[in-house]
Length: 228
Ligand code: SF4
Image (cartoon, rainbow, N blue to C red; front, top):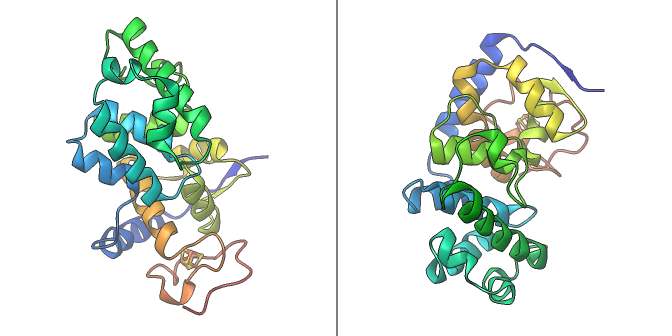
């Protein structure tokens, strides 16, 4: 069962401030990069986030770039055949399902939302292929929301290792993090923890010896650390 632990405010503050500095200069996660490149346009953020599920960042970035070169709006993307979307986004994982979702999502944007990405969680999760993770990231990056936390596998894993939450599933972690952390950090949790998770606090063999927050991290559940 999910439980949240209220970490001492100073621990959250210390972790977030340390990571803000430490990630400077590191490669950004793919959707953050696309968000910068596409001037924080909600439609591009939405589509890139759908493509990013269980896919390496470099692959997501390349596939999104190919797709946006061919179609940049819900109308032009909805007009593509599923086979063509498949060809453009391959080799993202589950590219056949994602191609169907992309087309259906664009269709719904046109039919139900006037060709615009809706700006509420309730509406975003109605879109095909859109769950809470994607909807939260669109709210944060596309609509500059300060009230959402986007939880992916990196955020879920590191929040548990830090002892901020004690949860089994990312969806539980999101709710637990709202209680365990101060709201001013919510829009930054995804960027900081995902970047750290890709470079240092890796799923297998985290580099605790190189970690700037090692002194405040209880390393919960970490069995084997990497030497480098
Ligand atoms: S000390 Fe280790 S477990 Fe804790 S955040 Fe750093 S890399 Fe991850």
